[in-house]
Picture 1: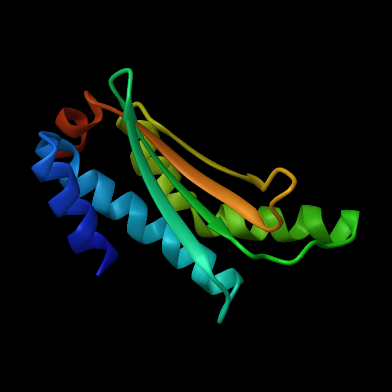
Picture 2: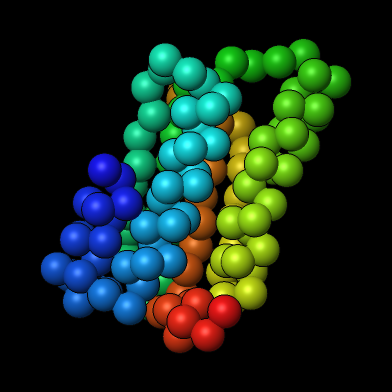
Length: 123
């Protein structure tokens, strides 16, 4: 469902070239959030500004002790490796960090410049 909605929103707002890559990024970010916070709320936002599309997912992932937190982030990052590789080849970035207070949980994001669509088409 998220892939369809993201595609439609991007096309309707004149960003159809980013529709496929945006849908892939949304799907992978949401999949990661759901995998690591099953049964909890997640949110997805899209923002177009200064020629860059930013997709951000927040989840309610529990806090860990320092050592366990480092291991968990590494595991989550590994689960995002394919997306990170594809987005990186297209000139974008993928990130994962703890949500900033007053929010709890995690924040995952992908940043896609307009040119990413052209690069994605030739991958």
